[in-house]
Amino acid sequence: MSHLEFAAETPACASDGVWLTCIECGETFDPFAAVRYTCDECGGLLEVRYADLPTWEDFEGRGVWRYADALPFEAGVSLPEGDTPLHEVPRMETAVGVERLRIKHEGMNPTGSFKDRGMTVGVRVAQEVGVDRLACASTGNTSAALAAYGARAGLETLVLLPKGKVAAGKVAQASLHGARILEVDGNFDTCLDIVQDLAGRGEAYLLNSLNPFRLEGQKTIGLEILEQFRREEGAYPDRVVLPVGNAGNTAALYKCFRELVESGALDEEEVPMLTGVQAEGSAPMVEAIERGWDGIERWDDVETRATAIRIGNPVNAPKALPGIRETGGTAVAVSDDAITGAQRDLAEEGVGVEPASAASVAGLRKLRDEGVVNVDERVVCLTTGHLLKDPDAAVEAGAEPEPVPGTTEGVLDHLA
Ligand SMILES: *Cc1c(COP(=O)(O)O)cnc(C)c1O
Ligand SMILES: [Zn+2]
Image (tube, rainbow, N blue to C red; front, top):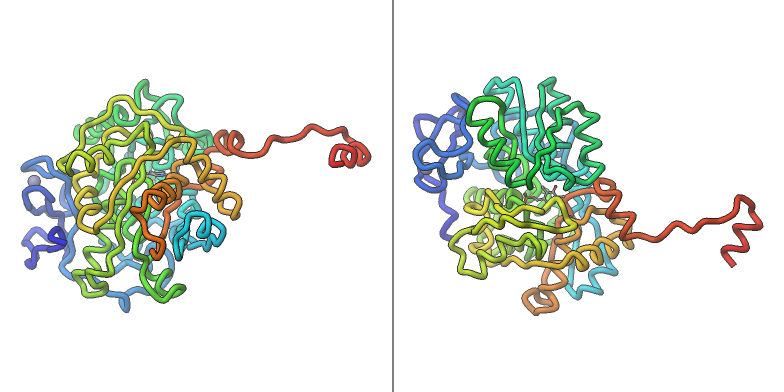
């Protein structure tokens, strides 16, 4: 894994052993002295770096902040987040045909998606740099999480959503938690372009996954998966399968694994294969890998029922593509029907997820059918958001209500 090495020396700009490094040119920056999302020199993505990387013994407590030694702060604005279940799904294991399959259900976070893990750290950094307005572009869940964490921190929040393309539960959350919601005439990528401009002009602090601190919080998904899987299965998983939108999670998991290898907590051979899944109508990462890994070509027209991953320009691709490649993983595109099928299968085992989340399971099934995934693999599928996020999709995928008369006899007649 050539991408693994971290610079040995702590630069003079570090603050308490934490700094930012450009992944393209290597320039380093003080992490909190000024608000900065990308490299001043070349515009490349920034990554948070640490003078000391922790190992398993250093972790104690619960939730995201259990992993404080791997984060830039000891604590943050917390609701609290993390400690999500790693479900067994024996019927699905048999149906898909892998030796061991677990579902890491991130829909069980406080606002119902993994975005909370990023926000608890991101909003803490916003407090550190001293901003008064937070903002994000969102396919829905980022706005729900930002609204809740912003409210908790007593900060004004602004969210830009693609008009008509955000699931009802997510808008409801952003609204009730008091965010100002701007419905943009355009898709997610347009919303992000605008928010980046606003942030660049100092109008707001950007909390999309372009913000490197959010990915630090999301790293804890990987730490939890490894700890839970090892405790319950006696080994680490061979593969982690996850839905890909902006590829922030893919980037965050890769960083998690690299840091563990660097600290000696994980052997290189133990690093799980990162496997991304996109919807067929929105699959620029899959296309980039098929074309030879050199980078993303933005899709201007994207469409899928899995609105959380309806993204044509995954901003974290420069971090995520090496992650998929260096861990020996791959990426695959699945149809909306396959996504709904997987959503039903998960629901049949009591695990309620939104469509984008089910993409991970649909992708695993496809890769297993194609023989890319072997029968003897230990696999974790990440389900990113809760069923109630998108009630319309759930109603459409589920059973029809049956009208009956308002009497016991009438109900019994109907059942017979
Ligand atoms: C944000 C989100 C994704 C996409 O995650 P990325 O880190 O942007 O790839 C997938 N599923 C759900 C439910 C989400 O909210
Ligand atoms: Zn740079």
